[in-house]
Image 1 (cartoon, rainbow, N blue to C red):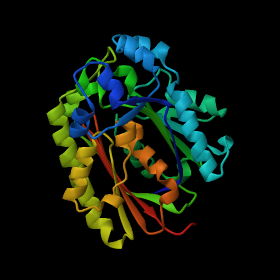
Image 2: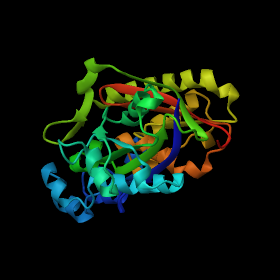
Image 3: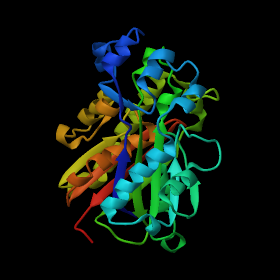
Length: 330
């Protein structure tokens, strides 16, 4: 069990609409995009005129053009989480970060986030691509309570648009940028706690999807989508069999890669539309911060008796699932 005290999120202001992508003249339009991925808008750290002018032909130049660094976005999400938990930065005893699109190879991005928050604490990065948040929760839930500080800050930031080739319509329509934060504890109780968290991977398929050395995103679309549908469906099934009967509301949050895929999983598992929480239609695929950002956006809506199933897949190929159990305030 790992207690969850609060969530936070942040997304940059610049919006990549379907009309913007259509105007890039790359062979796409609103209907084409909605029929395939169900995404209407995405956020980006890049200036829109930079994308229009260059189509991000040299991803390395995106590092200079970007309006936010990962650490700045991560700190903004963390500040919201701190406010919701009625905590101060100095209450945090450790920072763990993750990203598929870090600003630096070294040191840990967690150190840059801690600096933005003005705290001096142990910092490290833990990354498993889009499944990073679940992997972090899995790791911490296995630790002895006395081995960790009272409060730990998890921050996952993504600036995936830095790696997008905006001449490739199959990739350009997918990604957005953002950050999510969680404050967790192994020893201080709260009304919400993560249970039954698993993490697993199939490393023999590691080349199916990823970002290469030259900062270009690639994937074998059909293979990755098939894996995502099958594994997400199986993960939700496992959690339903254990927790659905006791739940006042059984809520599903998946990895925000494709709205049509997520709705398909919901239909297969008999989840009511109002109990399927998502944001991919307005923010795109924001990698490792996508599922936790959805939880953060619904933070004020969670109720006693909720069982919130999070099923996340990612490169590696990796997957994780967990249940957030919400009870009376401790």
